[in-house]
Image (cartoon, rainbow, N blue to C red; front, side, top):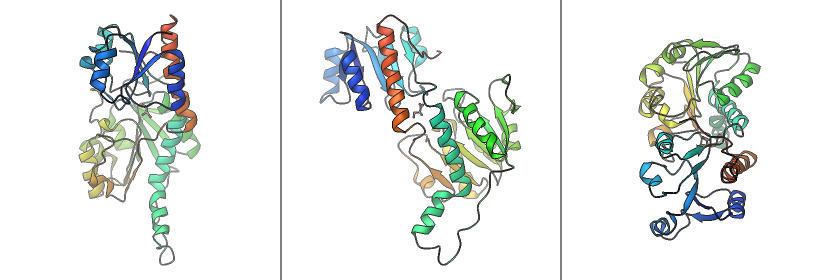
Length: 313
Ligand code: DGY
């Protein structure tokens, strides 16, 4: 196809190969002079393939007068100004479903790692402490109450897995959902006061910015565990550091941070935090499936069949 597509970030090699086979592909990230590339091809580009690292806002979209579609690698699309895209008649797509199981699995792993202090135990053994004293006892999951902030596709997949752990499950979101056997809370603060574990898996955006702050953390209490696999913007990181340092919550498992890839030194110094470099969907299988969906959305659109997985504005 003679359609011109621009990638703003390196994609998996198989994805780049598929894009190259289907389109005339330009790579902004690989250009020796990105500004010169934009000037040269911006007027012809009809599709963007993007990932979370590069914000796609009005001024960037304005560089592409023929832009029809932005295909995002990832289910979260908070770095794309979708309302602005809509105003310009530009379709935005993301990669739902293909990563649901992977992120849900990782969330359970991160929760167990945080509660049972698995990375800390590994460090303890490697540092040679084991022969001198046993590793301190940890908290347990069975019998606890777990609250999920955001019972979307991934939230429900996490809840289904949690059912096997003998926990009570609660959730908070905009409205109660039909047909789910979990307790609905219409207030996040109320839910935080009623659970031991709070799992954050809601989309990022103006409505959810800084939702988990001092008050929610205080309500979670000294046995409380926070797990965030959504976006760093949902949690007030400074408030979280204060709570972890003071022991007003027990621990935190974080796969996402406010200013990735920057992780505050104060957070990295805390023994009661388990920190991962945003790897929720990061398996070969799932990243390949996400990449394929990025390509399939573009192909479907330019073959006149419409987008496969468009996002709401
Ligand atoms: C997503 O899909 O939004 C993930 O955070 C990317 O791994």
